Length: 204
Ligand code: VGL
Ligand code: ZN
Image 1 (cartoon, rainbow, N blue to C red):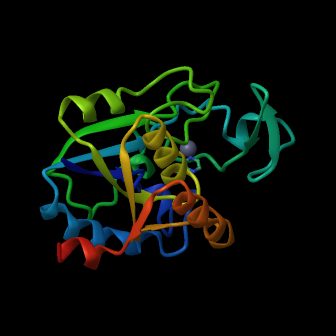
Image 2: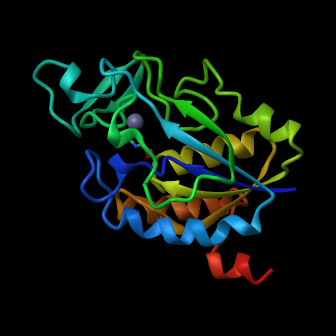
């Protein structure tokens, strides 16, 4: 069975938001158009406490986009974004959410970042997403949302490791760094991820 996984389609990642992705909001009408094609729709939500270690504001003398070492890994420091309970953490107001049966929140542990919707960056804790999808009978996951080169990418990599087939819906995602996405797109294809346009899904 096919499931749609909507990654971090939140106000802070859209134009005007704290960590805005150029044209990030262009994906919203595409996602809305895709919803009727799927029996199962889930979403992830970046959901940080104000003291989150990925925020530059929590490191003295650091500014957004600096890189530090955190738990033995390189960590990009971000502007404060998707703070629990704030407007910026909400889904884009024009995205239809009625069909979403479960929302998996991530990045809650203040000590570690979580790009993937399945696990934190050290794979210490799961969100329960893989178990939920399996129990519901999903085998092929169609990915959309933000950012293509960060959270969508890492969520797809974990999906493959969990044994799911993965498809990336290219016009329903958008990268923070377009040059990085060129490389990532190829990496995903090399791993067997199919890249589709929404029009291909609507005509199936
Ligand atoms: C994301 C950076 C920090 C994302 C989340 O959703 O791609 N990127 N937190
Ligand atoms: Zn985040």
